[in-house]
Length: 408
Image 1 (tube, helix red, strand yellow):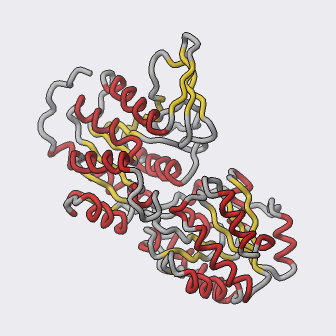
Image 2 (cartoon, one colour; image 1 turned 30 degrees about the horizontal axis):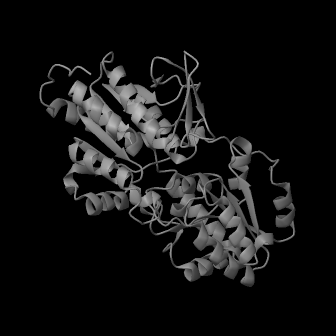
Image 3 (tube, one colour; image 1 turned 60 degrees about the horizontal axis):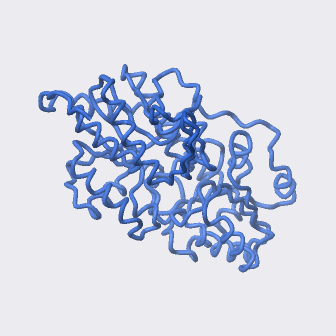
């Protein structure tokens, strides 16, 4: 089975969970004799040997430079010396055109596209190859807009792609129901394939935690509550800080560790100061490697207060590294992990109640984590890969005979 996979990021050049999910799913698929060519909008060394990774960019472009991250603007440097800046929408359009050219030289059985940024390229590849198209939905625009309507251009792309795709994969039941509600897609066209975690890829913690200041606080009886993710409206950090004010009032030796970057970074720092809890909130910015792992390792509690979270891989990572979790009921991970506390993202008072219970009760934390870890051990990307492989074979075998490719 040959798969043309369209994605926007892969580790270590990723800004969040999408790249991690793509990487680990593809690694599991490769074990099932699925031949994958993964098309990215940029060129980099990912150190991957289980699939081919190809950069989609115009033939006359010499270099593509990121302006901070894979979801920011890009600078294209052409062979004739010209330079051109493209925003995320322009980059997506460029990706579509580049994929269309690549399709002319590729042989594959099925197209698998991840999230809206690759959907138009997926549709173009489907048009030129007449191969079945599977769309993998890690979030929809309503998620990214924190429950609001969001960008109408993105919604139009999603609506068109969902209607024309052969199959849609949603990372959770909550995502499936949102696709049905927002885009009127038949339920039988959407299959839920939950994300998972490859525990073998999780680098163990070492005894020398990078957050020595926090280690000193813990030795003095403090409790550390960690959140790791993008600082965007979707992630619900405003609500978390309002809850934190109540937690600190009841349990003053509580420190909130906020790990990540995003457009709300400065707003959140200002809000913490306005709420009078600045000394109880530590913002680290974006972290990788050891500092990222140690953010989990130092945590007594992990909290994910997202307003809308299609899945939430960081919760599984937190459990693997030893922390119990409090998650919003508006998250997909709540469907696969039962042994975590759950709260409505908007209910700041109940969030404060549950956080206070966790930071003041070691036995509760230990029991919750013990049971969650047993659940985690039963999860596997192999199950998700088996579902995907069966889906590939079904749609390839039932797809109308391939017609001659359309000329680009």
